[in-house]
Amino acid sequence: MEGQIHGGIAQGLGLALMEEFIAGRSENLHDYLIPTVGDMPPVKIYLIEEAEPEGPFGAKGVGEPALIATAPAILGAIRHATGVRVTRVPVLPHRLWEALTRQSGHRQGGHREGGS
Image (cartoon, rainbow, N blue to C red; front, side):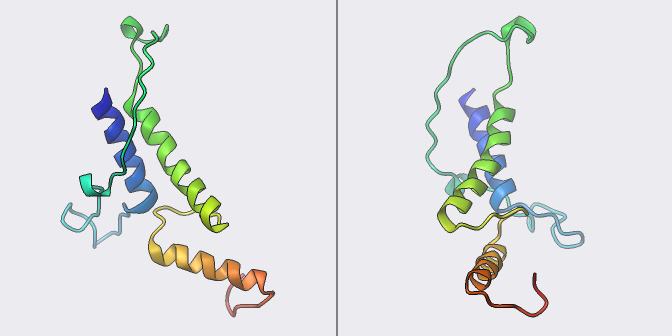
């Protein structure tokens, strides 16, 4: 179960920060960036064993819930740390920089040509 949770978190981290399909450029795993063990933060897992009445023999999924929550948590942390609400994933450095720059321009009352 812990492996499933770690895997779900890794997929969510990839969705939020790394993985982007670009037709003609990232069509193989050599060019498509995915998280590795070095990208993973320390993860503390708390297992609560309670049967799921709808699952076979009381079973429930563990990998998918970890995946589903990870990207929104990362984007929420970015917003909390920077004040910028990012709505496109992955949040690549240049995209975050652009969002920070736009926010800074709005705060100063400035107008950027071609921007909103």
